Amino acid sequence: MHGTVFPPIESGEILSTYLFLIILLGAVFALIVLNRTIPSLVNDSFLKGFVTLSGVLTAWELISFYKIVNPVLLPPASKIFSMMVYLWSIGFLQSQIYSTLFQLTIAFILALVGGVIVGILVSYFAESFAFMESLLNAVRVVPAPAWLALSILWFGIGHASAIFIIWLGCFFPIFLNTVAGVGKVEPVQVESVRNFGGDNYDVLWYVLLPVAYPQILMGARIGLGIGWITVVTAELASADANAGLGWMISDSRILLDITTVMCAMVIIGTLGVITDSFLNRLDGLVKGWS
Image 1 (cartoon, one colour):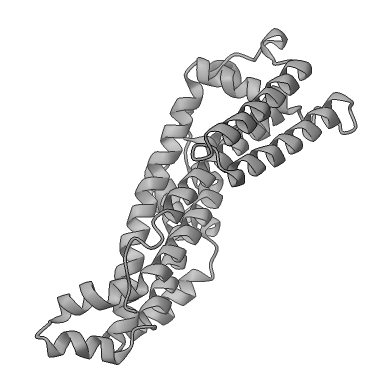
Image 2 (image 1 turned 120 degrees about the vertical axis):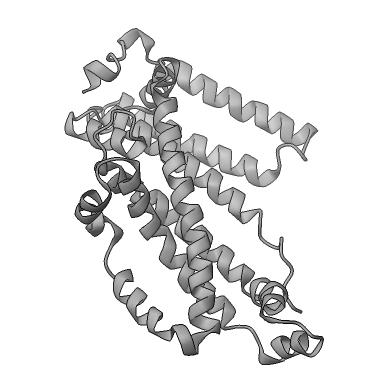
């Protein structure tokens, strides 16, 4: 498949170990200077994190360079980043990232909306919807990848199957945390709203959601993390060459192209950190009852 999707990278296009280490050292030095001159732009936490990452990359590069571990099994970091630049330059990487982000975004939004709604129904309106909790708990213990065969039968090979698998991974942490969050609502809080003439909508908007918000956000972060974990399995349900980073890992693994496998893994890890950081910034956005 690789030969038809993208040609192999030439040895001359791979960043040398010496140049790679010089670039890392230069980046560390530049960040130290920025940290000293513009601390608001590069804070101490970011600098320490980057220095630690640089140390890991340096060790990784030297282990492969001196063949402490077979470079076939552990390609040098310079080759991984060279492959990223190469795949980006030919337009291959962008389509994989777009496909994965599209599927993950749709699945996460559906899981967030569904998990919050069902969680509120099960916890706050327990008399009418308590039966749903037992049913959902039975479904929850079945791992999302186990649904792959059924998802292909139900939705066919393509985005719909992948979205379903990712949705399963995201949904249950959001649902369970919503139930836990709504469980923290005190009866006096509900009565306070009703005593001022509030209806069920007012209770939902001014009590349930603000009180449960921290738990919902925690569930969203956990669910998004599991969504990234299920991406690889979910994208097995596609035969399209632009099916996403998960497909890229699976296809490269079959061909023993470890460099491309690790390239996709690094990108997934990076995107996972970015998306989690975005959700983390939403902490405290909604003020609960004091």
